Every structure is written in structure tokens, then in C-alpha cells.
Length: 322
Ligand code: SAM
Ligand code: SF4
Image (tube, rainbow, N blue to C red; front, side, top):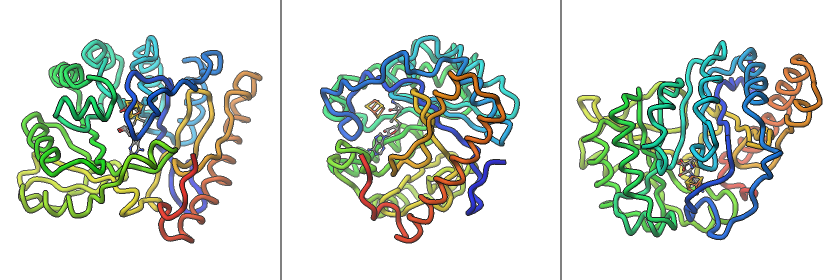
């Protein structure tokens, strides 16, 4: 079992399958961004499968496919099928901006993806265009309808709350999700990189209290150990989570690491350090060497991050790295 010395178990991996994206959300990517990873440096599907099979033997249980925009990676359902079949992996999910979802929902579901997170920051077409710098709303809504009819176990809408997000934007999204059985999550912008820092921050704590009152919501717990704090409707039919890395940090319960498309394992979203797995994979290393490297990465690096965060009581008070 992969555990750091503070007793946090790492059983969840966010796997970036591409760094490319068809949108340019203001809080995530600069408008003219071009610095993509060369394709020869992308881990192949077989390299990913090998590394994650070792990881799964050490206790990895859940994998989320993400990006960039993961649906831009060619033949993604093939990778999903490979990962869903790994012994020990009991949950395969996908985070997407939804622009290509209508086309791929059925093949992904068939390949073993059971849960979807779809990013959608507003139901107002002009506002989506302003935030994503593309006219994406019609395709995203279309993709969501196709995914709904496909019968995914769970669909969550991730809505980043920016400085200009109004109560009206949020209320419309609550109603939209209630009507469709989607779980809604509101996310505070994280100051990751220059774009994240410039995005503008909205403290979600007062928003949560207003929504609690308006919709008669009560505190709820959703299993899974994620960072969101939930409110639920009295009949349990609607759930809304608040991801508040800035106003209320969650380092103590963090259970996840991130693998970049280039094979770099990132231990913490708020730090730059990472460990290279592409080089050993391409140098024919043994599974035992991969295991040792995974253990060392998690033990040594996460411990440093965690104590730093705890010393400061809140990771968000540190200057985030680019
Ligand atoms: N392209 C996919 C998408 O948008 O869902 C997957 C990758 S995206 C980086 C994953 C999530 O990170 C999205 O929900 C997005 O809204 C969120 N995100 C990106 N930059 C962020 C920031 N600076 N602060 C908070 N959330 C951010
Ligand atoms: Fe692309 Fe997702 Fe970043 Fe938006 S948040 S630019 S959709 S990777």
C-alpha cells in the first residue's frame, strides 16, 4: 500500500493523456499558448499500462483520464479498455470539457469509463465564449445529453467560480443539474501558473450559505475521499460540492498524484517538483525498479510538501509555483 509518513494513502491517479486542448479557459491556458510537449515524449498506451499495473499492485485503485483535453488523444477508448482491465483498478473516470463528448461517449462507456466530470462554467453562451475563448456551449450541452442517455453511473459538472460569476449564474446551473440528475461542483480558482493567478478569486463560503438557504440544502457526505465538501437536498436527490483550496485547504486528506503525458509524476498541484518515469520505462527497467521509484517518490517528496503545508497551516498561503 502506498502511504506517506503522515499516513495518507495514495490510491488515486489523475492521468494526463495529452497536454493539448481545443479551448483556452482564461484561468488555465494563455490565449496564444503553443508550448506543447513533443509527441515522441508522450507515454504510449503500453507504457502507461505497464507503469499503472505496477502502481495498481502497490494499491492504486482509481484512475481519472484527464488532460489538456483527453478526448483529443487519438484512440482514447483503447487506453480506457487497457486500464479498466488492470487487476486492482476498480474505478475509471474521465474529466473533459465536453466539446467532443457527443462523438465519444458511447465508445468510452463501453470501454469501461463509468463516471464523467464535465467542465462547464456557465449556461450563458456569451459568458462561456468569454471564459473559454471559443463558442463551446452548444457542443458541450449536446455532449452532456448524449452522455446522459448513455447511462454513465455518475455525471458531475465542474463549474469554476471566477470573480465575475454571479449568484444568477450559479442558480441557473443548480437548476439545470437538479433537472438532469447531475452532481454540481463549484471550484475556487487555484493560482496555478500566471493564468490561474490572474483569473480572479471568488470565496465560495458565502455562496454556499446562500445556496443552503435558497434550496433548503443540508450538509452531506459523498464517499470517495475527494476534496469537495457537499450539501444535499433533503430528499438526497441533488448534491452540490464545493472545492475550496483557497478559502479552506484540504492537504490533510489529499490522496492523489498526477502523471503527465510526458511520464512525469507530480506529487502536489501546488509545487513544481516531479519524478521522471519515462526514462526508466524506455530503458527497460524492471517492475521492481519501478516499484522502488514510486515508493521513493511518494515518501520523500510528499512528506516535504505536507510538512511545509502544515507549518504554514494552509498551503494556499504559500506562493504557488508556475
Ligand atoms: N480539459 C478538461 C476539462 O476542462 O475538464 C480536463 C483538464 S482540466 C485542467 C481539469 C479541471 O481543472 C477542469 O474542471 C478545470 O475547470 C479545472 N481548472 C483548470 N485550471 C484551474 C484553475 N486555475 N483553478 C481551478 N480549477 C482549474
Ligand atoms: Fe482546456 Fe480544460 Fe484547461 Fe479549459 S480547463 S483550457 S478545457 S484543459
